[in-house]
Image 1 (spheres, rainbow, N blue to C red):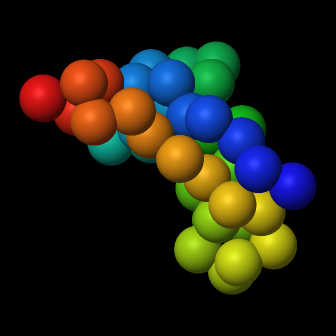
Image 2: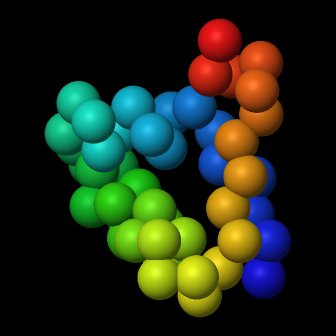
Image 3: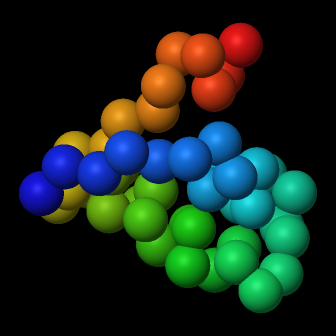
Length: 46
């Protein structure tokens, strides 16, 4: 499965924003474990 992560997913984890931090962490963890392919737009990061 391929997903496009919004900048907010990353910020939710980094800033521990509730109520989204836990779900966002799970998404990034699945990417780290290569269970899903996650992408972030370069323009979102800059």
